Length: 209
Image 1 (cartoon, rainbow, N blue to C red):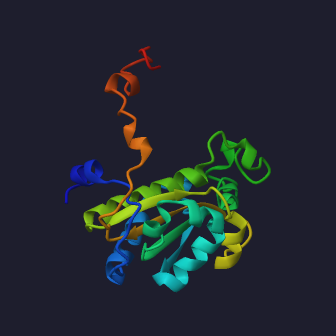
Image 2 (cartoon, rainbow, N blue to C red; image 1 turned 90 degrees about the vertical axis):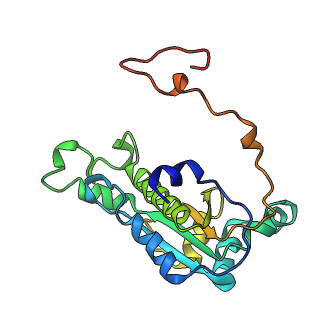
């Protein structure tokens, strides 16, 4: 699959067959993320890769509740994802990096603190890494779903032994898609026209912006 095809055909999958993912394929997908852009070459993100029901149960126990699992129409399909990749980033790594002589002039080092950053690039870098994994999985013929950080960050960090100072960015569920994937209501939203998104030279007002 070429890059254009991977981008255009990639979709979020919320129902998995449960079939195991080939370890070599999984390693290759994660390796692609290691080539994603990273501010100042900080490389301030890391992943915990959970494979198989015993390991992925730790993720679900920390980030969902019994009430949610009982009421969610997607829980049966999501829970069968054979691999869950939890993505973490460390803001302190960026503060340390921007204390270095070649970056000190930015004023974004340790003394300035996280609040000095107009954009928290630790999350941006984590997003770059996630997108690389999503495209790599599409190229491998696998389905993926990204779940954001909605609840249970501290519980997950503790369950996985992640050190203090690391922030949970979200998780990539990965595996072979199953046929029963309840459609998302978000699909009812039409894609914005190019004119509402692309502004050559200067911002052009449209009916939607």
